[in-house]
Length: 323
Image 1 (cartoon, rainbow, N blue to C red):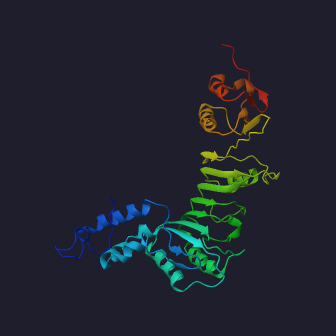
Image 2: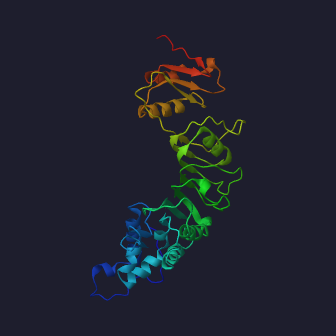
Image 3: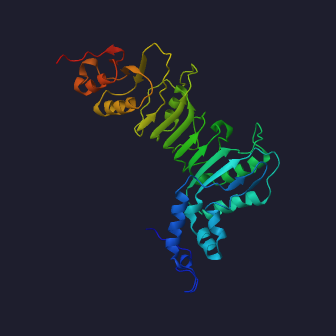
């Protein structure tokens, strides 16, 4: 296990102290880390109907309130401060000075650790249409550490954010929807998760983020907009695109799944797995590929006929072999 250096190796507590106070520092630090990692990102603030306060009843802030020794160990264990959830309350008036200072202190305790952030809309009843003074205070502090952002989850759209935020370490992004500039500052993104997406957004994301490995979309919108990029694009890093399939009890037409992929063994296995859990009835699979119809290995394609009625290559129907 990795050891954490806090400047001393044992608790400055005598032998008559409770056993919990006689734990080696390294073991206590690992306990702290396990507790913090057992749940989602720890929230820094606690919300009442009209109030915001420090969330001192939950780790890691809770660790700092047990005793002086625990506080020293917790403050010195940088990794437990590298994950944080910040709720934007929507308040117009500024926050009490203690709360922004607490956020700054939390981030300072994380030292140079890569940051995982969950930034969500407020839990208070009253919201405002645009970022409030309180929200701006918190966002300014978070953005000041944007060079360390590694994983970020937003409940707002990316278009609500400054497009000049520099995030060279950002590898995972989850947000409501996106509209990207051609030269984004987070071009090392590996995982993109959208609550709402479209063909245009997916195509633009693949065009801009050449290192993307996975794209997940929770809801697909059909707006009739065609991708602004017409050229063919290759994505050597891309491993998966996860899209929702919805059922409709009133549908009478056959659904068609179009794939820009080679009809290979691995692709067929992925399709079989995906359709096994689909909630709609896909009747036709059409491969868009440079592979000629006569070069398709029917032994590889054959399993698809157990889950769909028809398989086509660029619209040309594949005929099953007579056995």
